[in-house]
Image 1 (cartoon, one colour):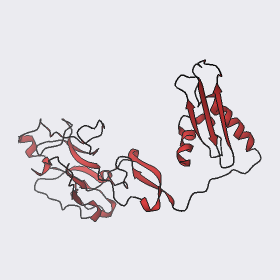
Image 2 (cartoon, helix red, strand yellow; image 1 turned 180 degrees about the vertical axis):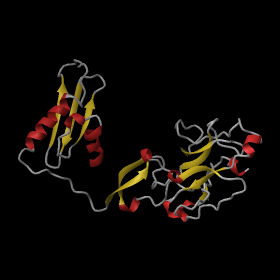
Image 3 (cartoon, one colour; image 1 turned 120 degrees about the vertical axis):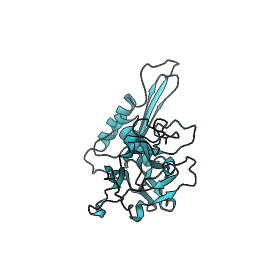
Image 4 (cartoon, helix red, strand yellow; image 1 turned 60 degrees about the vertical axis):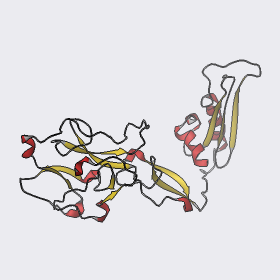
Length: 260
């Protein structure tokens, strides 16, 4: 709770109460009819609250708890901390700070983007021990933007989020397969492009990347994937790294068209 209330001041509706060098938490408040607004703030040493409004039934215009009330609380607390050492809060021994995937609430996997990884506090015994399987890397047809089929000449690897059909998440995994490249073409016969894993542990040797389909998880991390053109008849061994292997997702319902 302490951390949540500090967020109100550091990046929320109460930033006007932010005191440089002093950890500060607080909460704004504004009544629906705009007759009242207030801000309650606190530091490890002091707490303060300011209410602003009318005794009569009069409405205020363009006033809110994060405005003048927050500024007044800041002024009082800042004055109270003059000539004092910067205080800190102690944290209970069984509380730890961990990074988790914001989509699944589990430990971040290699497929989780930086924007989906958040830092939270947790009781030690409730720390998740499973890795996120909600982010999946799939091969997409560049032209159609849909799941690539075996005839798609230009493809790319993208990471999406598995969701239910009703989800409005813009990054949810596509469910349709490319309907542009549906048959064999002569130009495609002479193009032998594959995805390789460029993990530094391969020391420059080429390995075919393990790229998960829509019903799989794991595989080679996206940052190590590169599409290359192989000479006709050349084959590559698949990436042998243990943490780069594919796993079947039991909850997956999308058919992996690349295996057809």
